[in-house]
Length: 308
Image (tube, rainbow, N blue to C red; front, side, top):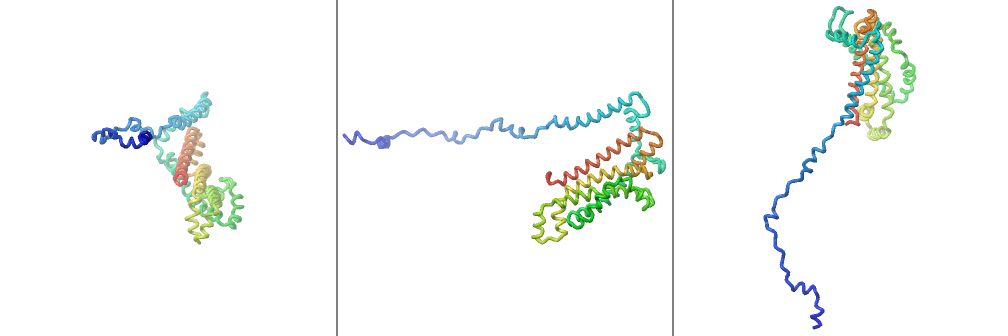
């Protein structure tokens, strides 16, 4: 009796046979997975970058508003007439000028298209020469302290000189207007490239140069493998500033030297008292300078490490 009273419940449970639960049909175990919810299917669509229409509107409308403000002030100032042309008269004359921009009726009577091309040709030659001299010189000034001490005072002395002050020197040396204008572009656009390139070389981290010393690299490999990639953003900034200076200088140089060019075209129209054509030339000069600026900014972004 004692053993019966104190019998373990686990033993009793082991002795008692509990019926097993019925097994699930095989068909239900192998049932296909239900389709994904609708929210999961719409997930790729929500991952697309939405267009910020407000930013686009601000980016487009703000410049247009500025131009409209300029034209509005211009129209108000000329509403009573006078010698200064109105915006409508200037636009009508611009349509006539650009309807045949490449006519040629002699060396001193050519369309505005030829004048722009001749000015760009002079800028390209003078700027190319300045780049061929200024960029290597900037590398050497930044690389060698002795050369920096020798040339830095000369740059500080000559850089502030007005561009037109160099034109008589060119006329004296070359005895012709075209090379004198190219010389003026060269001497005025070389300084930004020299200064920016030299500053870029001087700001290369010392760790890079120490690695070059450890690896016993030659001077050519130091320039091409270490300095050039690090200095490229500075160099492109100098190039962009030099192009703006070159385009600014050529207009003033052509006013004094004559021949064919947008600067000469402006001065010739002033001699004819054609103020409308002068205003058209001002807008053309600004547009070409802006396009050159955008082109070089695009090149700088293309070679920038931040956008790689």
